[in-house]
Length: 379
Image (cartoon, rainbow, N blue to C red):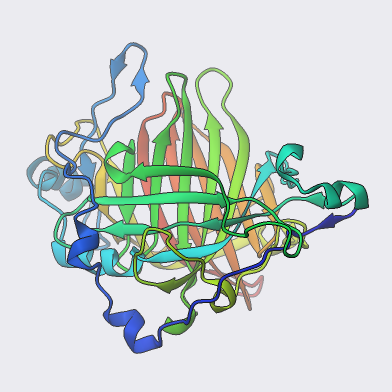
């Protein structure tokens, strides 16, 4: 049965130029839509063995030895994040992000949309529809670290002029203050760990901005790994969203239409695993590390700070390749810790990666991001 993308009738909206893109801040009227709470009280966390895990932010810079880092964690872990970096992040992450999204199995196969939402014409033609058209209006307050929320909207598929392309199927909202952990980079990338119910299940969301895209073509991918922890840790499934920024925050009032360059992708060619495995070295690395005690003011909310470059060998264990030159990895590291990793191959032996290290009890230990370069055998 052939896999074909969903067809939509879109409402056009003009795309601001690069100068407008860089200068836009969330308007005061829109900022009033933000939730009033911040990261105090602390971020909600998974319960572990009947009690809440207590952690404190521990950030290690390239110039800090392990001994000094331990001392610094005791004296500076409660310091608030750099508000100027948060303001830059808020500027870049806020706005209307439109594109396409798809669910994938733990082995990387696209999941067909529910039959009840697929137009009869597709079923008659024997066509599987595997992409949702999506909107993700996002708003962050540049003056209030941790005040961020977004709304994920899935739109019903249509055939030609059969129905209104803007018909909403589902709409779900998330607030950074409800994450078990949240770490961000000024360029607009972030990692968030979202608890799912009373069981030890987390959705680890990696938002990765393409570093080589011009300002007027700002694009990103969001990969959400659903992981079950506890006695039998495993990857349950994946959600992938490819999105482009097309204007300031309007809470999803209008589709980007022809101004958005993304197209359905779930049935496309997957990344070759040979592009993933091998020896790599990190550049422009950044990390946030969390130790034993939860800070009462910031919880597990942190800016990604400079980290030491390093070399690593990546094998095929736990790697799932995806379309859009993406990969996901979930594997055990030992000592009861697990790695959730997402990578975006950029071509020419380069990649941008996002990592989250979890304990078997769902405690977030580390969040990191880096640009990476493949190391040749002769290096």
